[in-house]
Structures are given as C-alpha cells and as structure tokens.
Image (cartoon, rainbow, N blue to C red; front, side):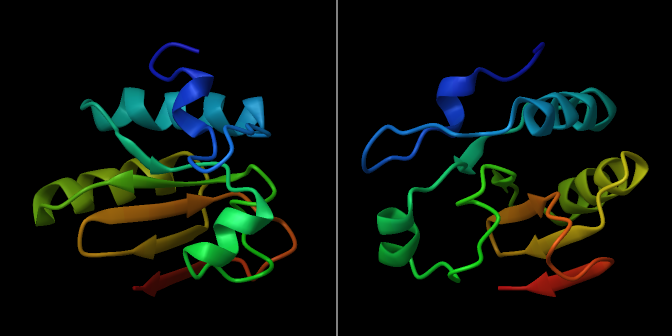
Length: 115
C-alpha cells in the first residue's frame, strides 16, 4: 500500500483490525486519482463499537469493507466523489465532514445518501 497503513483502519475501542486489504488497495487507487491526502475517520468497527456510534447492524464497517474519509469542502467533495466513481465505487454517503465509502455487494448498489 502506497498511501495508507493498516493501523489507520483499526477499531478505536478495542484495536481489532479486520479491514480487507483489497479495500485498502482500492482506497490507495482513489487517493492517487484524488491527488490529496485522505484521512480515515472511521475504518473497521467491532460490533460493540458499531453499536456505540449508532451504526446500522449490517454496516460494511463491521465487515472491514468501509471507511469514512474526512472531507469538509465542496470542491474537495466533488473531486473525491469523482475519484471514487472512476474507481468503481457505487456506495457512498455524504456527511458534513466526511464521505463514507464501501464496497459491500450485499447492500443496495448505485446509492448515494446523506447523513
């Protein structure tokens, strides 16, 4: 991995880290296209932590195939979403200070939601 270290995806409550390496490699490709650093604000979550933060039970974070990437500015949001789409991402959530990205194949596809 060029831009990310696996430790960036560890669960903050217990340190467990079952993040999928292929997912991190995909984020590396997105980062290359985006052209700016990407800060992971939430990566892998154990079930306990997912419950504590109000995550949905079927959250892709629990499966190690989701991340929330810090992003607060409109232009950066557009550039990051464009890089995600260019790399085949079809599941994104837009928050005020982050963009959620995941590669779940069991959850609805081609969706973009707001927090």
